[in-house]
Length: 119
Length: 107
Image 1: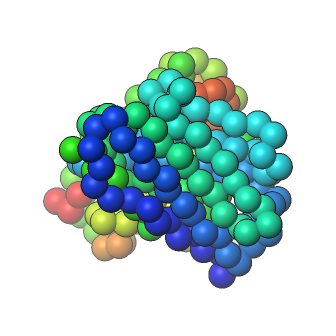
Image 2: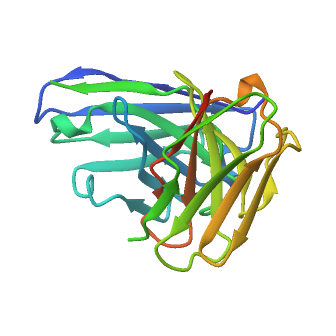
Image 3: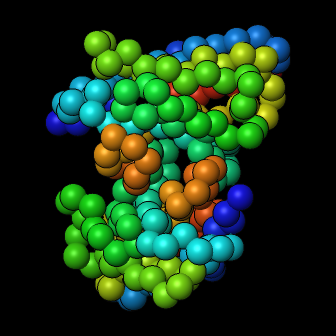
């Protein structure tokens, strides 16, 4: 079945970098836009970034623009989030999610999340 | 930026009762609204997309509707597994945004 598995989270000092990965299986990864969404402890959901199915278009939340970079490798069914110059406010569970189509649509499949702690 | 305001923040109901959750958009988003359910310690799950379409595998007791910029998620008869937090989300304009959530708790 369709599945997303995130990895790469951990504890990192402010100002340092971290790279999250998301492994996709059970669907044609190259046919769908992909997203990163985060959730700070005890808080709601915050959209972080989106990449179109072919990697040509990327979008970022203002809070991460210039510091985070989304990328994908369709040959490996992988989505990535490079996070640089991390701040304490970036502490959150990071989820990758699949779009219902090749561009922006509802997020129909979610991973279990990976925790990032900036401290 | 489009702001989604969910109300109430908390809804206290008993199993079998009807739940009505609201989400108001700060400007027109057409029908580009989705609803998600999140249980404690779990990832969100898509319930409704495009205001009123149930996602795959979602029970018929969940329904969504729209009136202008006001959106409603209705759970016709609460089952024990429905007690959770519900979020609305718009995809009409960048940035994508989520509402603050409504917690449906057992009364």
